[in-house]
Length: 156
Image: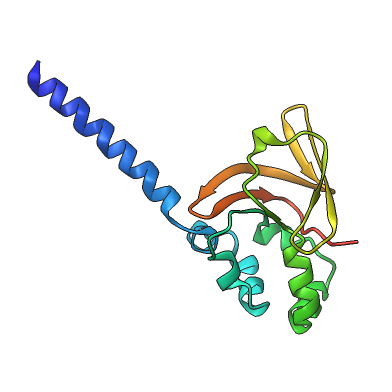
């Protein structure tokens, strides 16, 4: 019986440690490790935003996948990568100050770090930001949270 208690305690500690490790990475490192944000990471690097998104935050990032970037009209990504100011504006439109979990979202206008407001709606168990759907929510990072979206957001 004593051996079973020790085993159970060891298992609980191991599980707790694994959970902490997942949250030990900042937003940039989490995106890199995920493997499906290579275009976003490349854009963040090109815009000079790596240090910002590795900063203390907290930030809420609506992160488009590589598949989302592939939906952009031909030449759009290349044009953005060639124009650092415009690229930075688009990327910061995907970021909110503070940590906003999916459960905290109702219908709201949220001020982005870029300065514009994005329209966020939670309805029937799904969350939309502008016309992008959140396909995976609440990826907790050491300096905020990532919500994976299926489209690239464009400021108005």
